Length: 187
Image (cartoon, rainbow, N blue to C red):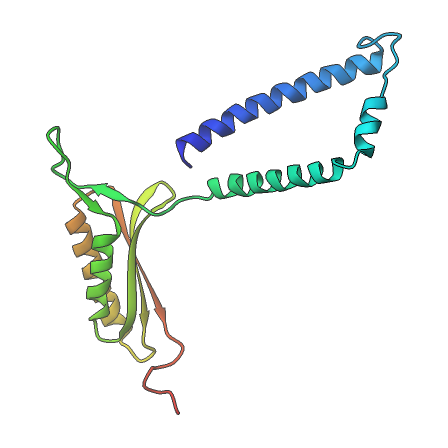
């Protein structure tokens, strides 16, 4: 979650808590008769506002604004797994060495696509449960030798981690077997 959203969450939680606390104290004081002793409330202004012609349109506009705000709120809380630039070893006070997070993983996926029996492959660098994960996914032909593909994928994963040169990056390879051979389709 982004820092701005987290700060807004905390601020709104404190404000909401204070409003609920004040409302609870006011409700308790009203129930015991300490809030407005011997006073009657005039609700004429509220009744006339509810009967006004502009009131339904105003309620509709407020509802649309609140719905859009709720949608933004939900989207702001979606976890962002993608990684932007990654610092490489050798970065120091004079400058930094950075690489686009998906660049090396896409290159590794392209190499994996060249392995016999691999139909397609993709790669990305993501955050997963607090770890940086270099993730390779490949679709394998049904008749491919899974042992050979798995060995090649493990070698490519090792090369990818060596290229990134960061001990905090973990590698993951996901192999899925296609349902049918591409060449086995009948016209």
